[in-house]
Structures are given as C-alpha cells and as structure tokens.
Image 1 (cartoon, rainbow, N blue to C red):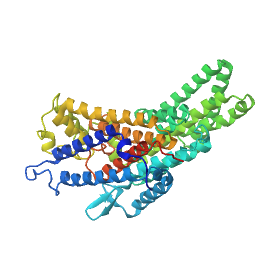
Image 2 (image 1 turned 60 degrees about the horizontal axis):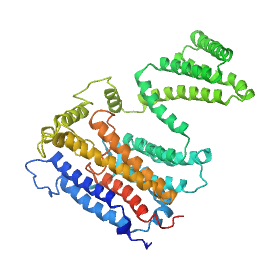
Image 3 (image 1 turned 120 degrees about the vertical axis):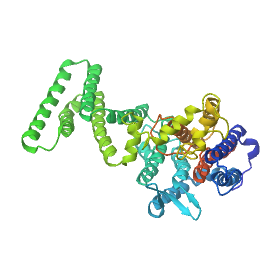
Length: 474
C-alpha cells in the first residue's frame, strides 16, 4: 500500500531522537557490561556488543520499513498479525528451546527469537482494532469480556512457558481499557488484587479472611446504618459456620478451618439471596460478592504460590518482602546489583571503570540488570538522565496518543505507553530491589535482538500511525 503523506514531515522527530539516543546509550552500556581486555574493539562481532551493533543496524532498517508501509495496513491486518503471533506462542511450547527452565525461544542457527516480545505489539494492534468501533462500550460485559480475552490469551500462553515477566507485561493492557472507559471499580479491583496478593504472603490466610469479613460487615453498616440487619447477618453466618465446624470436627475431620470458612461464606450467600432479591439490595449484594471473591482469591493465591511458582521464583518474592536474606543464593543478583548502583555515588566511577561490572559480580548485567552498569559507572547523575529519558518518552507518547484523530491510533498509542512503562518500572525496580526479579529487559538498553526488534515494532508502528493521522482510518 502506498501513502500520499509526507512521512519525513509527519514523523515525530522528538520521539525518534529519544529512541536513537537510547539505543546508542544502551549499546555503550552493553560494551561496558561485558568489556574485557582481550576484546577491546567495540565492533568485535564475536562479543555481545558487536552482535548488538548488528541488531541496531537491522533495527534502523526495520524502523524505516515500518514507516514506509501505509498506516491503514496496521488496522486492516491487525487480527492477522495477532493470530500469527498467537500461533507462534503456541508453537514455541512445542518446538522452542528450553533455556533456564522456560521454553520461550526459537533457535535458527546462531540466532534466537522470543515470540513473546513480538506478541506485545500484536496484542496492542488487536486490542486497538477491537475497541476502534465507536459503538463499543467498556461498561458492558459483551465488550469487556472479549477485550479481556484478547489480553489473557497471550498472557496464558507465556505463563505456560513459563515466562512470568512477559505474563505480567500483558496485564499492562488493562491500563488501556481503563483509559477507554472501563469502570474505575474494575480497575481499582485489579489494584486491590495486587495488594491482596502480597497480604496473602505476609499474613496467615485465616486471619486475613476474618479481617475481610470484618471489613465487609463494616461496609454493610456504613451503607445501611441498620444494627438489626448487621446482627442478623452476623448471627446467620455464625450459626452456619458453627454447624459446618461441628460436622468437620466430629465427622469429616479433613476440611480445616479455612475450608470451613469458605463453605460458610458460600452457604450464607444462599441464605442472604432472598433478602438481596426481595429488598433489591444491590449495594449489599456487591459487598457480599466482593467478600466472597476476595476470600476465594486469597485461597487461590495461596495454592498458586505454593504449587505453580517454581522454588526460585518463590524465593525471589520472599527476598523482596524481607522473609529471606539469601545474599549468596537466590538473592545474589539483586544484592550485587544494589551494591553496583549504590557504589556509583553521585557522579559514578567513570566509563569502563566499574569494578562490579568489570569483575562480573552481577549475572545478566548486559540484559536484565543493565541498569546496574548505568548506576555504577554514571552514578546518580547518569541514572537520573536515563530515567528522565524514559519519563519524557512516556509523556511524549501520551501526548501523541491524545492528539490522534482515530480511535485505533489513540488506543494503540496507549498500548505502547503501557508496555514501555511496565518494562521500565519493573526492570529498574529489579535492579534496586523494589520488585521481585522476573526477568524482563530494559527497553532499548538491554542486550538482545528480540527485545530490540519487538520494542521498535511497537514504537514505530505508532509513529507511523501518528505521521499519517490526517489519513482516513476505518
């Protein structure tokens, strides 16, 4: 497809400049991260920095190619691209190579490609295409369910690999749904789920569930101001709970206190159903559903944490929460990264002068922990500049998204900003010990062709849509 739009005139040069600065800075930091005296030449293609240079050159060609294509191509073929990438996510489970316990990579001789990195721009396109129709209303279940399914499909396929980092990144698309009109209640519920997840790890489940029940009764009181109703509900729950507990204690003897509490809550809901219906007590019904959902969620988190996460993943979460201080085992990476960042001081030790970096104290220091090289050699000032670049890029993307004339372009733009923000926040959070280590790259900085190409596709498709914003999109 050919376009009559002057791309050079329409492209946002500020964003392109930030992109070029970032990939160049990333390349020099990769060189510093894996530098050794035997391979001083930065164009040594046997080393990671030499290979990254090849990826960067190919990336620039890719960016130019993306800009040449008619912007309507991305709308018309959004679902085709999404379907192809979902197929690749499925095939990697069968044909992919197992690396560090995860089957996430295709190998083609010396080249490895990670389809989950490309699935992010495919998901952004599909979500934008689905929500593009003005009749779509994210307050209706018939719209919310398909939109959520578009997000959950790649999240599920990456979780099976398992690739926890990419799975979490796909959930960032819920920010897009919130921007496009999804109820704040659903969005806040998602944030509460994250909070409840950590509370489940911090406190005994039974005590946490009792606290949730107490909160629910307080909400009932604040919404109705009826003591009689409150006491009736409490007595009813205590009676049902007492019966279930007695049956378990004397006859069944295998349920346990938490299961007794869950069954009590569900049976109480059946008993409350008549009141909800006869009095049309919608507020009370919402409170009950919130309570039941929260208690079931607490139990599911406990099961998933203990049976689905691998031991090293559980250890990373426990180290972040302060349950463990394994500085020589699972927590070694984070501990060394924090030391590296902190040792840089205000101005840094100087380029190629980082001792933590030079002596390879930090594993994956050219990929997931590339920021520790920035912190050690460039110090607080350099880290501030890098973080400032990301913040400026994100603000710029939001500005560009808001000026779009088509829904498709705006929605896709917010998808780009959401993915980049999640990568930026989690990766730097990992490097300084604020979030668990889940292994995701820092956009445009970390070594790797898949991530660099994936982020380039994600960004430049949006720049192409922005450059052609005066064109008609269906």
